[in-house]
Length: 128
Image 1: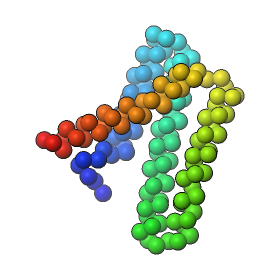
Image 2: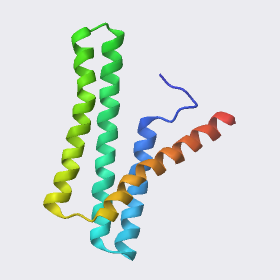
Image 3: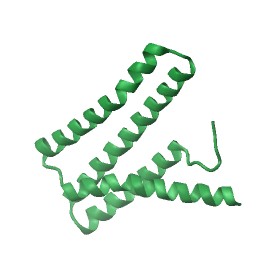
């Protein structure tokens, strides 16, 4: 299922990883190591979250198309469970490790930047 006007999840994830590495390196050089580590952790959390969300989406679509009632119901419960699990993980990261909040936020923001870049790239490719 490939639509030339929709960016692929793999492209978004790759772009996010590149932006995350560059942002962490720049932050580590110009700001501090703790901000750079926080950025890496924040970016890693959203990359993992996006990967899990994509996998759950594929399972939900497969269950819905196969008319698998029990699996479809279970996959719908999995989304809120994933959300609670990620929120608990982030809480534990902040409570137990004392990671830098600004760095973490910047790391999370790399996902949005990657989505904007890949959407723009895809739109340019589709227009030509």
